[in-house]
Length: 91
Image (cartoon, rainbow, N blue to C red; front, side, top):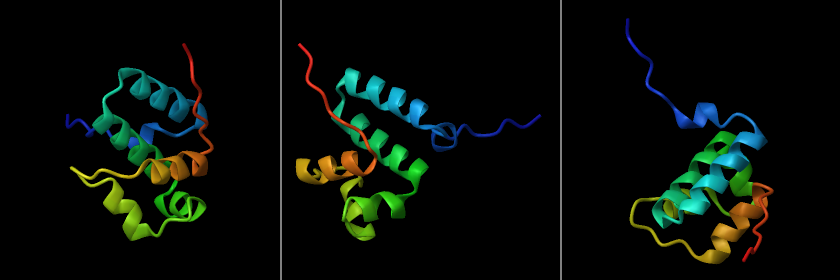
């Protein structure tokens, strides 16, 4: 029996699951993992759709998520808005 390789993007198949996934990643606070998670969620939604809503061209969008990249907060915020994700402050 051959096992199928697990694909996170296939499992981010509802807004509730995507929200919970991002919440957990944000709680961990690892910036590289947060960037990866935003990419996975964007891919699950559809890169072209998210990039268009964020008013970013597709090439720039992919560059933001390359390993070692340091995307601007403004760009990340646009993606969050395109994904209909709101940031909140808690103390």
